[in-house]
Length: 114
Length: 155
Image 1 (cartoon, rainbow over the protein chains, first blue to last red):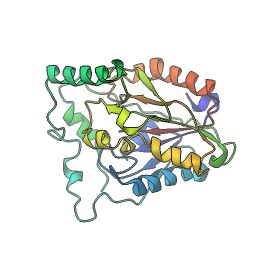
Image 2: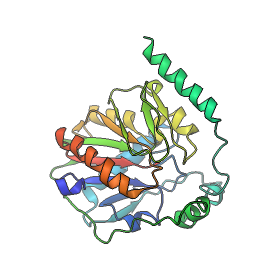
Image 3: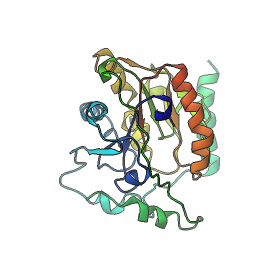
Image 4: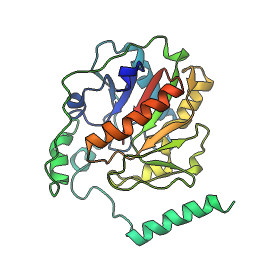
């Protein structure tokens, strides 16, 4: 839809089986756990390299639907996350509804009382 | 080995009605008109990022939030039920690389970072809602801002 109005798009991809089904115009795959498609927390150099590589793919992808796979490895000594990511129990326990409401109220109050 | 997410989704959400994958037969395509270093680039994440007192998302929520491009990390929060958000809460750049793109704007890696950036919560079961409700609004935002390249980061 965005491409149809003349705006080129590029998406990061976390799933090498879903992306070819959806067929976005340009995709860049990083084999990191969900929630880390532009890198690890507090590692700006890694984030910078991943995003820079992705932006470069805007210019290098010439075939619609091409998926560029970046070579970054989450942990060369431990691939166990691939066995557990996105399987039953992979989500940490969530706060209760009441606790979540309190977190939300506190966040909003912090900005609205100023 | 990259993970097969389709079977894992079927297992994780087995209590739900059988999920029908979006399978597109064709690929939309617009060529980049000039080098990315001269393009006005917009950022959008599906990672559920919130700015200051913006209301959180809820399940099946196809709304979006406008995040000012100069937002500080301390002003961002995360609400998403579908991925572990601790790392994104600690550093939103994991799913919303706003700081990195600001640096790239300053270093002229991109021409300009469009203001605002966009965030939604990607755990929307209905592809129809995303296509018919969310996408047209984002398209209107991008056109109004004369965006020349659109960068999406899922979570």
